[in-house]
Structures are given as structure tokens and as C-alpha cells.
Image (cartoon, rainbow over the protein chains, first blue to last red):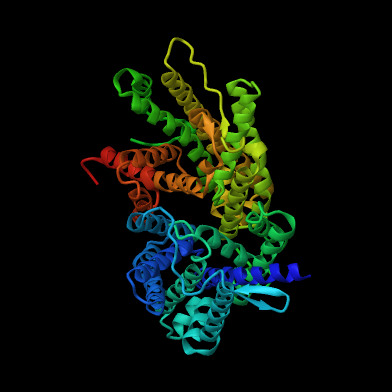
Length: 293
Length: 326
């Protein structure tokens, strides 16, 4: 039972980050119907910016917001500089997805050029070795911080989307674009902000993942794909679904690693994707789109 | 002028004598390559030939049928390892190649099943998941991947007094020719038109009497057969297999080749394969710049030239046909 709780807690902490990544993917998907394949690479870029600032000797509380800002601004620039012109040229959805793929490739190259391909250690204020005893189970400072970051990030996004005027505009835009435009909502600006917020969430996840993994230009690939899995599991158009999906995936993964097989722990996410898509394509909390000719 | 008078004429591979002459000249130029070009170009064209087969298969799926797949590296790995194991068991080259294609094709049918229910982004994720799952299975299973030292693939024994590189080059070129002709025939048949109908609107295609299940699965099977053969040829070329070869980046490279070459175009697939092979070799000093260039090319192609290199080629041809008018 203690082992079970221990695994579950580790899983929850990892899962909250998958949830953050998934939130970014879902936020963009449900407002523009585009799967952002550059999500992981924008997060990597932001994390490397934070790393550069910290190694220059700036304190962490400076590096963190700067990294978020860089991630967000890059995504907004991409939306206005590439996605909008492409849409004006009549690019279809597949084309737009491929555009994000192109952006991902560009970032990969730039990151390798700027910071090299060798893995670095990310100096992080929270330590992995310092642990507290919580009844029968142990929790490290890092995983507590991670869990906190995931929950605070999700909560802030919830407040933004549900309680502010901007959030109302975002919901209206994703619900019905032409109607939102008719009502005078500046939909392009709102969509641009959605891209920025989503990418900033990705950067948060990246920064909290970096100390547990080693920092190399491809370190976000795996968490990004798991974020995808979490988003599919929860439903690609449901924000709460993304968090639930992330937590479920994290716990399932940790339990599989603990009880069944450590080797195939990472494969589980993809098995989950395929099974969910076969059985319930709209995900746990999502709803289906009906299509007509 | 360029007037098509009957359906028969429309189906013809090359309509004008000049096209046949140019194609013949190109073929002769390729066949004579080992006599006038540097040996490194023979190797490069060998890789381009084997890549072009895979890109063609991917193009049948993405360009013609409109089913997006990011899991090509998975089929590639299945084809390559099937080929390697068959070769180790002493199966001759062409039979092993056929085995690689068929195994990958069967895997394609299995992956194709979700495609009946899934569309666009969902299918992209499912296939991406498949590709990575296959990679991890090979990386974690020593029986399949041959353990730490990798899987050695026996080399081809050259015949007719040719050196090994030249012999392999001719075989791969011949296979590329076979696959090109086969693809042209496939896409101008009923099957090809069914694929295109599914791409343009699957509901409408179903109403018109296209059996969606059958043709979507067929598209997956054919495309993964091509990719399996590509994998087999790649394994033969490398002579040594490691799971790391078949990571996500490999799927992306194939994808870039399809987009840059031109969606729904056979000659575009060959051009795209040439692009993704030549760019890294020419930029070997600046490795970091390769993904940047790939990405930028994707952005430029999708915004300014959605039909890729094949579209550019078509426009150039049209320009000279109409010259001096425009």
C-alpha cells in the first residue's frame, strides 16, 4: 500500500507537468483546430533561455519570467508572421499543421547551434535529493514544486479563461469564429494571445522538467508526446480534460514502471493513445465534432 | 498543342515523342553515371533511389489519399529488421525484400484500422504514437534488434564484374524504375481515383460508392509496403542496423521530402528525396543548419508554392510551352 501511494505520488507530480503541456496543446487546438507540433520546441527554447540567464548569474526569479515571455512572444510572432499569411493564401488544416512542424525543425537547428547538442545540468533552486516524510511516503522538494507548478499553472489558466473578459473572448472565438467577429471581438489578437499563453505554459513545464532530465536540445520530445497523449486521453477540445488526462497518464505510467516493466514504461503513453482513439476518439471529457459534406 | 482527345490518351505515360526522348536521355545518363561521375555520386544516387521509393509510398498515403502519417519510421524499422533477419537466415535478396515489404504492409493494415474512424490531427497522433512505440520496442528488445552491437546485414555479392557500389546502384535504380512505373499505373487506375476521391471528401466518396474501409486500408497497405521495401533497401545499404536509425527525425525527413517534392506527385517524390539527401551532404560542414533549412523550406513551400518542386517544374514547363506568350 505504501509502495502504491509512493508510485501514485510520483506519477501525480510527473502527470501535472504532462497536464501543463497538454493544456497548451488543447488551448491552441480548440481555438484554431491546429495541432501545434512546435509546442515542445518552443518550450525547449524557453528553457534554454532560462538556462542561459541562470548561468550568466541572474537569479532564478528573473530568468523564469523572461523565459516565459520569450516563449510567448515567439509563438505570437509565429502566429502573426506565418500562420495568418498562410491562412490568407488558403492553407488547409493539414498545411497549417505542417507549418508548425517546419517551425519545430527551425527551432531544433537554432538550439543546437546556440547551445550545442551536449546535455547540460540545469541549476535549479529546488533539489531532488532533499525529501520530506509525509506519513508513510517520501516526497522530494522537486516533485512537490513540480506538483505545485502544475496545479498553479492550471488554476491560473482556469481563472483566465473562465473569469476574465479576455477569457470570454477566447471562449467565444473558439466556439464560433464568424459570430465572434461579427460581435466585434478582435479575433486575430485573441487567437495570437492564445498561442502566446499556450506556449508560455509549455515553457513552465519545460523549466520544471529540465532538472529531472538532462537539458539537451531534444529533451522535450518525450514529455511533449506524452502531453499529446494526455490531451487525446482527456479530449482534444477540453481544458479540464487535459489536466485529468495528464494526471491519469502520469499515475498509470508510474504504476506500470513500478509493478510491471520499467523498460516499456514510456511505450504505455502511445498504447493509451491508440486504445483511446479506437474506443472513444473524443476522449474522456471532450465532445465530438459532427461533419457534413 | 497539348490537346487530350480521349481517355486512353489521358492515361498515356508520356504523350509526346519529345518527352520519351528526354526520359530516355535521362535514363541513359543515369545508367552511364559510374563512368563519368565521382564514386561518391554513385553512392549518393543509390541513397536517393532507395529514399525515393519510400517517399513515393508516403506520397500515396498523404498526397493522394490525404491520410496523414507521422509513423513512417515505424514501418521503415519493421521493413529493415524483417529484411535483416531474413537475410541472416539465408533468404535471397529479392525474396527478403518482398518479405520486408509484406510484413510492413501487414503492419500498415493494422495501423490503418484506426484510420477508418480517425481524421486529420487524430490520425497524425495515432501514427506518431505507433512510430515511437515501434522504435521503443526495437530499442528494448534484444531478440529483435540484435542486442547492443546491432544487427549485421550480409552484403550483396556483386555480379557481372561490377564493383559492389556500382552493382548496388544499378539494382536500386532498376527497383526505383519499377516502383515509379507501378505508382503511375496505380494512381491512374480505379484504385488511384478512389484514393483521390477519399482525399477530397471521404463522405462524398462513400456516397459515390467507394468502399472507404477497403480503400483506406489499401492505401495504408500499399504505402507501408513501399516503406518496408525502402527499409529493406536501406538495411542492405547500411549493412548494420541499430534502432536509433529509426527515430522520429526519420519520419520527419520523409515527411519533409513529400512536402518539398510536392503532394500528390510521383516525380515530385523523386525530387523531394533528392532534396532531403543532397541538402545534408552539401551542408555537412553546418549540420545544425540542416533542420533550419528544412523548416524554412517547408514554410516557404507551403506559403508560396503549395505544390512543391513538382509544381515549380510544371510551371516552368508551361512557361516554355507558351513562350513567348504568358
